[in-house]
Each structure stands twice: as C-alpha cells, then as structure tokens.
Image (cartoon, rainbow, N blue to C red; front, side):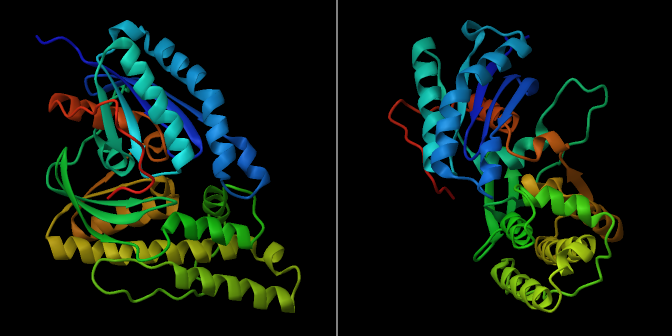
Length: 341
C-alpha cells in the first residue's frame, strides 16, 4: 500500500481566510475565518481584506494542522489559490504558501479557485455516509458572487467553459438587491432566509433572453432598482411592508434565469450528470429548483454539502491532491492572478 499524501491548502481569494489539511482525498480539517469588518461598509473592502488575511493566516494554518493531528514535517505539498480573486488577498495566501513550502522543501501546487469549486464534489470526509460523486463527463453550473458559468468537466483536471455571464454574476445580483433594500451585508443569504416566508409570484421581474449558454444579470439589477425606487416614492414603508415577498420574487427571478439556461445546457450537451457549485449553490431556492428539474428531466443531480459551497480551503485541497498525483507543481517565481480562465 502506498504512503498517504498530506497536503496543506490555503484559500484567500476574497474575505475568507481558510486552511485545510487533506490525506489523499479525505479532508482531515477545514478551518475558515470570516472577516466581519466588511459588514460596516456594505461590501468587501479590498485593502481591509488583505490586512485581515495577514493577521489571520498563521493562526488559521496552525488550527488546521492541529485539528488534523498532522505536523508540518509530515506534509508532502502546499496547495494554494492563485486566482481569480482580489489581488491583495491572493498575494497574502500565495506569499505564505511559497514561504511555507520553501522552508519545508516541499512542492507548491497552484489551484484555480473555480476549479476548486467544481472539484468540491469529490471531497471525502469522516461522515458515516459517503455521498455519491459525479461520473465523467458532467455539467457543472458554477455560480458565485464573482462568477456564473457552465463548465463541461471531462476529468479531474480537464474541463472547459461552455457558457458564462456577459456582465454581472448571480451572486452579485443577490447582493445588489439586498443593498438596494438596505439589508445588511452579506445580503444574499439574508434574501434566501426572508424568501422562505414570501410569495415568489408577488412581483414580476424580467428574465433576459440571452443567446447561446451565456447569462446576463445587469438588466435585472437595473429593473429591481427602478422597481424599488418607484414603489418607495409612492409608499416610504413599501420595503418593510413587503420585505418577504420582494425577497422571494427577486430570488425566483435569479433562479429562473439559472434554471432555464441549465436546462438548455443539458439539452445542448446531452449530459444527464448535473452538478452545481460555488457560493450561490448554497441558496435553498436554487438547490430546490435544480433538484426539481432533475426529477422532471431524469438528471443525476449533485449538490455539494453547504460547508463546501462557499469559499473554503477543502476545495483547494482536493484540487491540489489530483494535481499532486500528476506532479503538476509550481515554482517559487509564481505570482497571483486577479483574473484566470
């Protein structure tokens, strides 16, 4: 039996400082430190995010190693998020990973943040029940605050984008809608919570007709802005009086855009293995809609556990493990990239 492979993974692409330790493809620890300071500004402030990463990255890594009961000298490699993301935040994680690997004389593994979201479906943990994983090829809808795209996944390290947003991401539409309603940051999860008691058909918002497998959310954001402005002008208490219905209606519109395109992508590719990933895949409305479509269209639907949907280092660790098996290592000259394909 071959020796186990231990990898430390670092994720710092936005406002979550995260570290994980994986043994082969099984997660031993997954530690995430959130940055509450951004709540005061209604969104992520890049400079504050990078400073917070500097303060938290060492204690987060120490906690991850401690929880995993793995010493730094047992590590075989260090995986890290190279991009995409906020440059200052990425720089902290990349610099730490490079220094840590150099000190231990072990390989570096760069990971595309979006590839990590896709491969999160293959994470094993110590739960008693093993969840099913997608078989190749599968179609993955990766949807987050910064990205909305269809990925045709042919193997662990082989995939291609077949559709993406032409402007804003679905997660950004959620957050913008929340900000227009004066809801606290982060607004997306709060809209999801409030929508549970609202009527999704109370108010109508337009669903854009975009060609091919691409998305657009800028028009929906503008429509929502004018909708709120006009109704508040007539009734200053409109938001407070109809909050749940507004949240349910805008969530319904965003999910409808995603589901319509997902059905089109599945038909276009002829693929029945359908997965969703990224932070917005934690949205209960989207999870329910995908599951419903799966039953109607005979899809095999795969939805990652909530803890692996939002930004975390476990997904970087699993991607790093498969790259380790193929000896896809980086050198010390590597730099972060704010944008990556």
